[in-house]
Figure 1 (cartoon, rainbow, N blue to C red):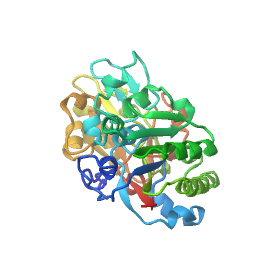
Figure 2 (figure 1 turned 45 degrees about the vertical axis):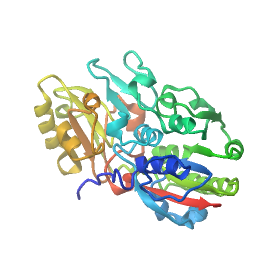
Figure 3 (figure 1 turned 120 degrees about the vertical axis):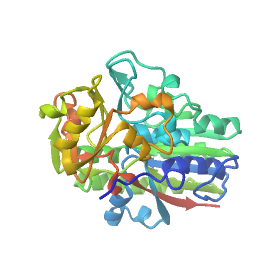
Length: 371
């Protein structure tokens, strides 16, 4: 099996963002060919992979009855990267949010892009991700933008990096999120995003397909139906996700295999998409070691190979190249490369994402319209 390289420029989350701006009448590309509307609502469900949804139509009858298509998330297939893509309308190689945990170039420590924590000085959001967001561009065109999500996300460094310029509406309960959306859609031209994260959490802890995950999928389905009921005339709702998920079947512990730590200065990324930063002069040896240990269980590439293969997009900005590991290790099937000492919580998960498999890359794009 070959890695599923995301369809940048054709059917990726970056193409969805640019198409949504075109739907609202802004100049620019509409690669998905979406029809014009006065208002768009994006229901972003963390972890709702297209293959996962297709496997359980009985738990989501409303969503399963919608017409739609499949997009690719981008690489790595993880929230920090995918929301960066949705927030900028650009592939990861352009916006620089290239994974869950990345090395700060020249500083010698890891930076967690999602939690906005670090083993050293924090970095200003505008410095780490300086590109104008779709919300800043929409506001300049006179379009109202809103992001409806749990209140704990308001003002975080991550939100400032990828949702800069949006009006944040803090809402924890589903009822409050639905009401927040209804009010935001009252504007004559509106771009509204509403986020749901509990499906992903259930998948991580219990596995996708578990009773807990299926319960969350049913809740997502009911919420989608309620959100559809808030649409004023001339509006469109799109349901998508940031990534899919696989359940772990084979664990390789980098903290228990000396060959996976020899010559490694920092181990970043996550269990399904590892950025391996080598000590000076050790990149070649680290690449050989990781390929030797992982064998057919993972695609293991040098930084140059990963970039040339288009994993991060058609182009990676030169200043972002040092954020990519000297070695990029991407497990296949259900293999995960955990780090039990450095990452005890993440190492205990059941469900994971990040890789270049169909289960993680393919996300749905479902539409409900009142045009």
